[in-house]
Image (tube, rainbow over all chains, first blue to last red; front, side, top):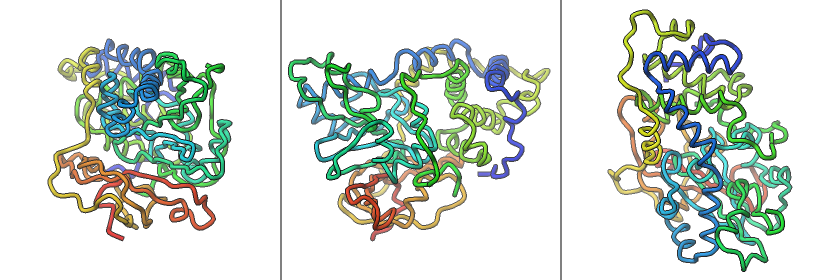
Length: 207
Length: 220
């Protein structure tokens, strides 16, 4: 790429305070006819209010309660997740990985912050942080301890580094004593972190 | 490129910034940056790979200290200026240059939501048979080029096993150059033991799986 000398990066031309920078660039882009303000509002509304881990939770709860769906999800997550209506940008190619008593999966993107937007929404700050990206491929158990998650020594840990356009969704283990719960109730136990692999699903009393 | 963005395994970082009940956005401006970057990308003057590379080429100190959405803003300004959609004078003045032509109608909300629902798949029709099969042992390249690549530094020169066949996907190393060529080739999930990557003291129950393109790999 032709811009390795980045000492005169054009963002230095903007005001130093982020909110003012953004206002300045928004005004320019709108006045140039490059951005429709209504489209900004539509995207903000979608990611702030509509698209989030509640989507992925429905996928997991269905997999917990419907063996045929679980198999479909593990065989062809893209199609199985699209069937529930959660597809599109940054979820074009999905793979679901299932936790068991003997196996724990954790997802990261060490090179940037790739994350399955249609199922989990926009990523939390810690997922995008240098700390997580640097440490989780080397010391996942140390990282998990910061989430108060401890795995037995004999549990295999698989870290998935999202280096391409494949997005990973962890299917956490279904908590004990939930046999009488339906998919809607179970979905409330499925946290964002449990679908990244930095948490477990909640116990019924904790939801 | 051997950039500061390539963080896997870098030591010295401390505790994670975990926040309870974190909102999707911490401030309105963050959400606007995300929206504007998506909307400007809809002009198709760049692609996701060139977009990622623009963040990677921020000065290293900026990369480590700017927040995520500050980096996206810097990237948005850089990409828009390089594509000729805005000029340096316009950025500095915060207003269109006198007499500049207004762009054709930008994509509207419903238009973008439709695009968002469709996504931008990176899979392409295969042009050649995949060289590797499930269970094959492969060694990753030792040296990469100075441009954008998705072979992380910590996985270079390592032997792993093919565990997933993803089909043929756009190669970021080529597509990020914006020549119109996508360089699509077979993409594989490759699993490495932590001992292969980090040495014999590493956790024997730990592995790392990354999605790597065929040209990053050789039979081992």
